[in-house]
Image 1: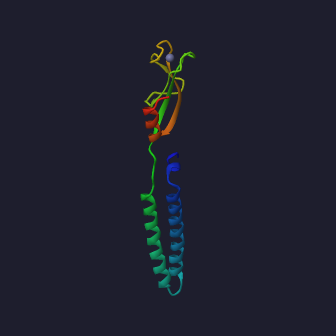
Image 2: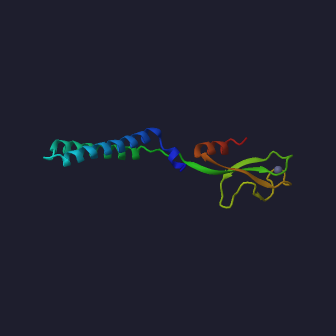
Image 3: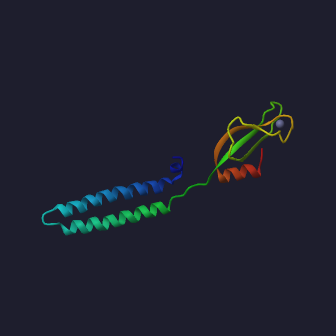
Length: 132
Ligand SMILES: [Zn+2]
């Protein structure tokens, strides 16, 4: 999944740590239960540890930052003489090498989708406001 890449590394580590602690404290609790007689200290330790690890995981989940990504269609003119080039938001039905309409610049060539890319929303806004 591509979304997983967007998860901040720190929160991923925190999540993994939380999961690891959870397993450790479950084992501690289990040892407490199977001891004869039951080791109440271990059970309490396991329970409080479990609580902390759950807390840690929920904190990690809150800290997840997903940069907003948008799908962009890169459009060029099919005429080799024309340097028309622009980016626009991906529309349903867009595919690479799709030709459509007439070039906005030379009006002889056709618009050609050269590339479909995923881009950070901020980056895209920058391109839109400062076209090459
Ligand atoms: Zn053109």
